[in-house]
Image 1 (tube, rainbow, N blue to C red):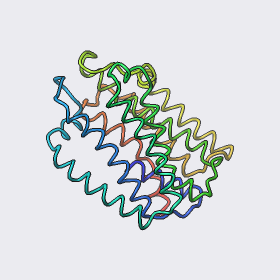
Image 2: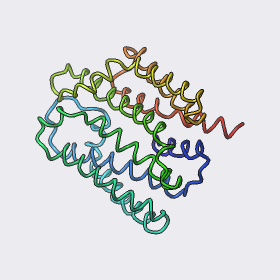
Image 3: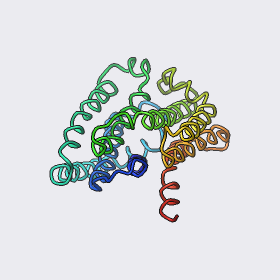
Length: 262
């Protein structure tokens, strides 16, 4: 949902017409990658007494998720074969190599490697590239107009991942789970400042005409929402940390709904 909303908002901000099937394909692709990551994690025996609710749910319904993933994979393949633009399919295959490298590092490499590099940055980067892919193709592969929106969106995604990883780690007493890398702990420790900075930069870039208004409004709202999460952290139960962090990135639905009504 997050990827599809930001893709639609970005296309509207740049006055581009997207192939609607590609937005559906993006949602399926992101969901498949997310679920595949959880399926691999939960296929192993539980080595700790606590795991995030999303993984606990996946562990309980492992075979159901596997069946839905296979069906979604076939659906995505059918859409790509018949309805996607050729340039998008080609770029998507190239991006899948980066996803494959990430999975190899996370699930095949020694555990000691996983906490030594900023994987949240890698996740945010791949997620941003995937979200912006179809827009880049529709925009005639013009990178310049996407650099500033991409940097802001990547910052939001990295802050989101850092928040979830660090707060869940702290909830276990910082003992049972792998220690998050320094970059993730920094992002979570300075979440209020990071969210406020993203909101402020978004407003300034819009005022100097370097960021489309609709996109600036959404990044401003999401940055502010992340800062509010930091402000009220003590009131958020650990089971709701991940949903709350993801909900903070759903600001485009407000902007898109407002534009539709107006």
